[in-house]
Length: 114
Ligand code: FES
Image (tube, rainbow, N blue to C red; front, side, top):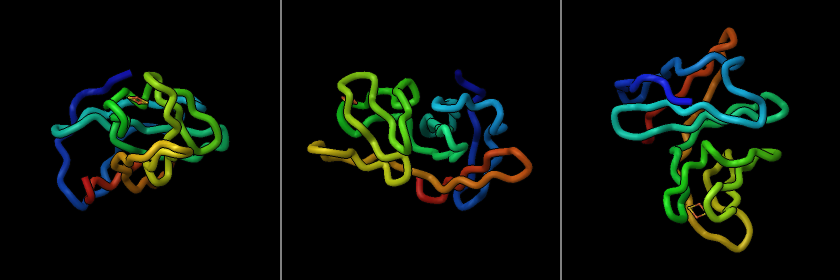
């Protein structure tokens, strides 16, 4: 699901979505003025944010399957580590990840390094 585009300043924590609005083992897509960000929620309610673009051929990682703390790209099944954005196994590549914190049930993302 997609929300309205956010205009974000660098170096700021931005409220992006309520934790309860992200399905467990799923994601929400946050549209910013420069890219789409996928915000993932694990079975253990850990939350990770990364550019919604596979390092292989730009597949939409938000539509992948979350397992543990990684996501499998829906296009060619690369597995991407949610914490580092690195491809796992024999594949090589990395997508941008962003720091996340949860306050009062609201997920905040720091876009400093986008
Ligand atoms: S685009 Fe993600 S595995 Fe190919």
